[in-house]
Length: 302
Image (cartoon, rainbow, N blue to C red; front, side, top):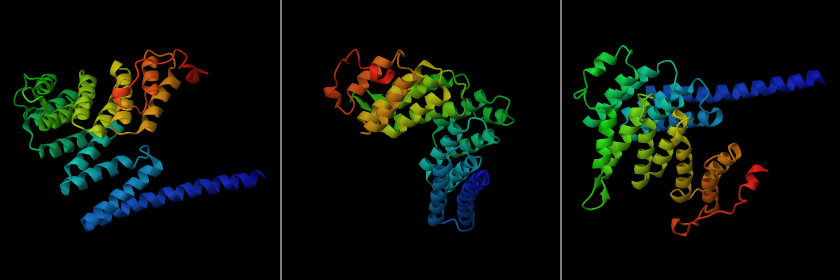
């Protein structure tokens, strides 16, 4: 009997190993095909193979960081700036410490320079130098800074004040996009940036106003990952749920976020707010109730 169980376990391990090898080989083969024949079809084949691998094994597999940087490079060379930037961002946020990260940061800097946004470049250079003063390239990056007396925080705050056209009461979407990028890069290149949580939260607010709900969700997620002990970490969680509910019409995702908080901390300081959000889940903002019943917490405690 024990021999049979051992055989089953061994076969299961071998099957998982074979599946892992097969999927990884598929990604490697697709990447090699693209390198030999850099066509749109081969680029898409690599993207699909990479997605299948990550869907199966998540982001914990040691091969994934390299796949993300390869994706960024492919999209960059093919002129897909948004996808390339997304891969760079995913790499930096998912893997805070991995061999070669600082070199990939320099690669991202060279990529972002192609956006031709001088103000964004200055935030980027300053953030890298402040976050990595001992890096061998810090001195050369520092020479690119044109106004060292103006801080990253001051630059972001000044743009925040300039985003709205007061006369027409409209958001300047180009400036809003620049603002969001500044907030993202300031944290990606310097995860010790003191004002990082505040600026990321503001970037999420602006993204929502600009009808970039998924961008807002992503930025709010960063706050939880980079600054889990910051007061805005919980606020970002509630904001994510609200956006899922009211902007993306995904009440299931919103409910999951709220209920997880209540399960983890049913008597926490935000429990009443979350109960209020749950009680009004799926309702138009104009119909939201102002109160919840006193015993509404019972189902999450018992």
